Length: 105
Image (cartoon, rainbow, N blue to C red; front, side, top):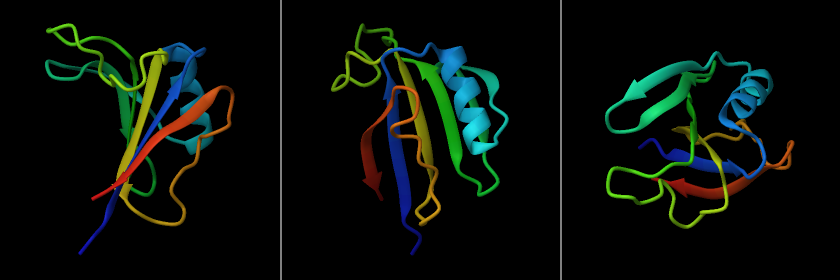
């Protein structure tokens, strides 16, 4: 059975464009703008290991709830998901980016 890992990073200082550029450079992935009725606008792509990366403004949904209620002080969120492995990208500690949560399923 494959175990998947889901990392949530956040930054209080970087806007979505600055975070996208930093993540693209560090992970070497092209992040393109997407617009989803469920997710809203976000930058997304997959790295060479097939992991899914999304960078988005930490906003509110149609009902007024924050995307991540436990982390209201973060203005930009970065999601990385994929098969758990030892070479999973690590962004924590880079230019005001913090690891907020890791889940395994």
